[in-house]
Length: 129
Image 1 (cartoon, rainbow, N blue to C red):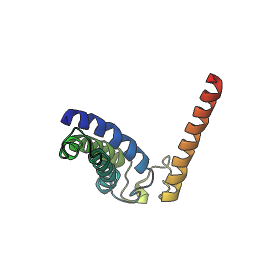
Image 2 (cartoon, helix red, strand yellow; image 1 turned 135 degrees about the vertical axis):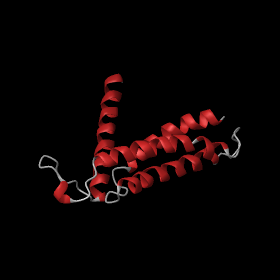
Image 3 (cartoon, one colour; image 1 turned 180 degrees about the horizontal axis):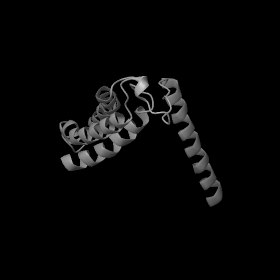
Image 4 (spheres, rainbow, N blue to C red; image 1 turned 90 degrees about the vertical axis):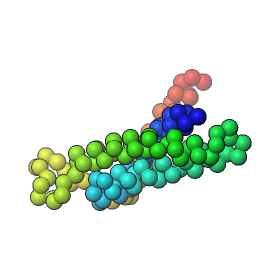
């Protein structure tokens, strides 16, 4: 039971945190940004896993099972954010552009990915039908 919730948690947290990293905590240091990227994903995973009243799993399985995947994704995002973190603007190399810290830019990127996915799905549907 815990293994299944861990496997589902690994996928769900990956998907949600991949979306959140575009616009959550952009100006925060790497550890705080990783926390704010993974914590809401973990909370949603636990919430949606524990909601069904007719679930064959006890209610404690989802919070416990999704804890290890949340830790794995926290580590992954923290390492990624630390690689790209500069404490000061003067430390930026010449070939590294200054990132846009506007959360609206992240939402626009996310909407663009969604639009591309919908176009690809539409083309596949037309070609199959």
